[in-house]
Length: 120
Image 1 (cartoon, rainbow, N blue to C red):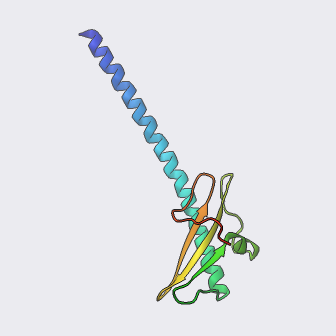
Image 2 (tube, rainbow, N blue to C red):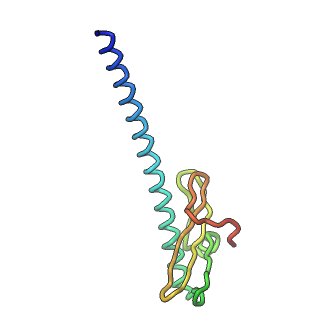
Image 3 (tube, one colour):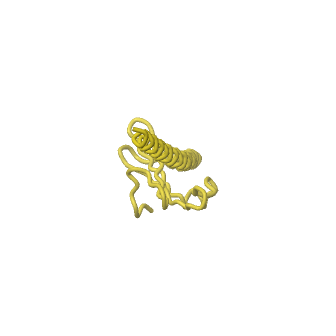
């Protein structure tokens, strides 16, 4: 009976440690994703400002792409990186009744859903 109690206690401790470790790792990834989401917001804001300042808008039902390089060269964006992870990105502008802006980034450790390569 005593051995059973000790084994149960050891298994309980091991399970609690594994769950704690997995929870900690999950929070770390969630925090990192938030950094990338902030970067998306920064790119989006820069693209909106660039578009508005230059009256750079798409025609009805068409798309307009503002690249990271355009934003950097026109001083609307300084850099696009999280820690040492340098990213590429663009802002997609569409018009239906109003203008819609969506930022897309691609980094070593993160990519916005729907990101398309070879956008220039």
